[in-house]
Length: 344
Ligand code: CP
Ligand code: NVA
Image 1: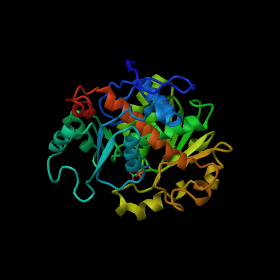
Image 2: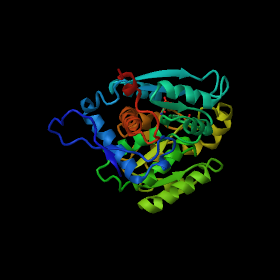
Image 3: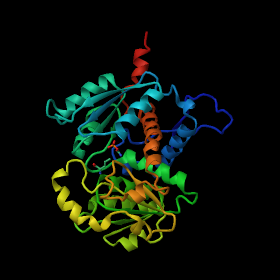
Image 4: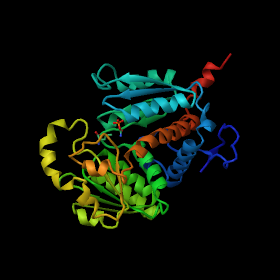
């Protein structure tokens, strides 16, 4: 993969900094848009950023990130904002929770305005096609901060967490129990790129999207990953090093809550369910969590839980993605705006 040297402070005796991956994709919409090498290089970069934040302090000096949110957020919003600030840039929050993207003006016009001032856009939308249209319409990178179809930034942080937690990574089995939703879609793609074993148990009627599964299976064939999907808990949990779940009702599905609570009742991740995985298996959740619904207090608040490590790792994963996209110029658009404002 072509790489660009990082403009970094000299290493402080703890090994050389990884090179900045130059991604073939100019946007970060789905993990399946990355090659295995690019995905692993981003994980390496995120891990180095975590250990040596000072090396990256001025990397995005003067750069700006627009943050479009149609849905609420704690982790995604805060970590993107802090990531930009800690690398010398800034973020501008655009609240689209009251008036969805495309309602006041065309998405294309939003994109063509923002590209004149900003170096990247992160968007959290209901419709995935809104993010795709934004990405097609502007010359600066667009990052998917969660759509109804996928959550690639979350899966990057989750795989950084799994790599930290297991010496035997990637020879691990991850079990996912619950809804076949956006989070699962990105985890399947990440598992396929990383080459791990992943096994999924969803209630009947709540399977992940067949096209996403087919795309992940195609990637898995190349990496040696093993992905299996079904409804049975036993098969999914047997031998699992880690168990992941997410909310039973995603944002926008509030009206289905009662029905979903009934349909998912047998899929609650509690102590009995964890006992069907490997002894000492770790627990993951993207958060926000609903204690007493998809996970019991005794699991999420126990020492096997990795949920706050996952949340912390959002920051480093975000920094890696921002640095690679903004400095990589894979869309062939503007140089970073820091370069414009430095012009005499
Ligand atoms: N996990 C996650 O994306 O959290 P937020 O919805 O708070 O951003
Ligand atoms: N599946 C959840 C993830 C939240 C981070 C949702 O879409 O609401």
